[in-house]
Image (cartoon, rainbow, N blue to C red; front, side, top):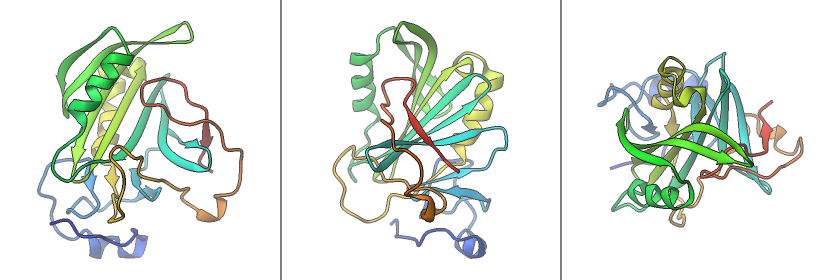
Length: 212
């Protein structure tokens, strides 16, 4: 049902995304019809532009495995993982999060079930929301921490951002829960900058390499 599509190029967007979306909002799979808009192409993720957001890549060794978005004293962590064709991962990952992060409760949110509460790291406590979206052979984990976890006026900007994310799973075989690899928008910059410890979806405050 889902076909591999070449990496999105600005001059090809209109042709590739001419079909009308069948849902009101995403996150979108790259091979389903989705709105034609200018996005930051990170390979496995295409992110909507928002001039108010500071978008950074999170790395483990030499591999980019996630994104951190900073806005209004808040952070949004995004990580796309490979999932089985037959079932989603959110129920399993919720259980894992609950065993590692205490003081969380489950509630219904814009993407279905989510976890909310407080996240304690290195003696510091911050409000946190864990949101999960199961897609075709992928899973997107979003962790909102800080002011946006309790202030809906700030959270709305993050929710709208997540709803316009495009996930590019690809056809390559991947292990269950393996991070879908990302890259810098300009591949020529891939060797620049220091690589630092990266994203842990169960903790706040990863060291990250900034997109330039």
